[in-house]
Length: 324
Length: 306
Image (cartoon, rainbow over all chains, first blue to last red; front, side):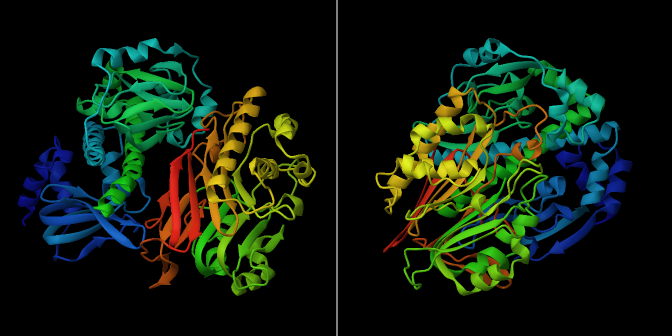
């Protein structure tokens, strides 16, 4: 594969869309091309995430350890797809083991090199963060759909107009003390002024326990961030349900729908009484598509949340895969 | 805050759970992986049932306020005991002059003559305000046995008080119901006193034949202002389990062998290995029950709505 071919290949990768040719040529120089034979392992789950891999050709299988020393395959990836993103982004060890199932050529990008692409205030870094959020939201949706199918039946969400009214009916509340918010891990790296900008961007509401804020299958009208209390994210089919996440303080929900324009993949119900920051759709759009420090922090918060949710959701997916 | 561990299954040298793995319970006393800002340096305790020992229904008991990592007696004993049921605990307390580090506050709690023991990971905020309202829910003879200053010992007395016979070995179902009932009483007493801040109650309750564990928190996500434990309490207090045939070392790594039906289960605040991959997270707001039966290990998880 010549340098020219590498650049052409990178130009077709959705995550890198919008980068100019000089940028891609620079990226091609720092990526390491490898041919990996069928049966070989790129890395094991839990390994130090030193790199991610872009698949040029061939196929790889991602698997997760399940109890009893077994591994369950949770997906396959091929040309143009990326593996190893979660570990490289959150630094907590590769989320899956990746084994080559059909001899593959991969372009490996080191963690620090990838971090450099995301750093800074230039438009390309913002664009990459948005592409990343879109890609991760699609992966999350795919994992959630896999779980939903296992329950059988169809989601029974409220009619769309009812879902849209939910936010308006909640009781307004005062903003939280910013010293409390700053102690949440979510906001440790947030620039203080940007945090203030973010915290004053929406409306605060109080919500009693047991309230459905978002229904699977209905469009989300807002991004919700839990300040106090907890919100369960569930998939419900008749009397069967899977809890796919718990949004406690500093965790968000409702944004997948706002990123990709599709209906919500989960139902969100307050488990505890909750104080929530509600960022309506239009404001979400401005924050998501902006290119200032507030938007940068906001995109980081979404990215962290997606990482954590993807890791959480992998577990029931693995259990399900192992049981089949 | 603390760390808890329960084991039920095939005979297993206790040292393998306490010392040998790279995130063993003793290691969690000075280097917990899933706790922010706190260490667990206020003592160690365990109850270990060994069916080959004299009076096998009575567990080996070891409790000491010494740091377990430097406790040679603990190492010696744990290398000689192969247990089919273990409940163990390393205690963490707030770094303040009000904390009482004493033998009487060490878990697992076990009143003389009783067959149930309890270890607790969590804390009931503003416990001093509710302590004496719990009296009416605790049998008088049990209340008289409370020696320490912890909320956990009261939870223990409360659970025993919900059993038909506090000194017998309850069926697993009865023990599970008693535990859930005790949590409901705590919820009601908290409400009566207007206490509405986060109070995690992760419990391991054991009898030698069965273990009941909970992962719950009252008012999760709500904290008092200037809370010194905030960073520790912001994430839901963790609880994990590994289930399968037997817990063994293979090629330098510890894990459960496959087992269907399962024969052994470990329940712990944190996985006992840095590699979490073969461990499962206990869902928030849920209860686990495990029981040794002639056919293997009966194991269930269920939602706990308290």
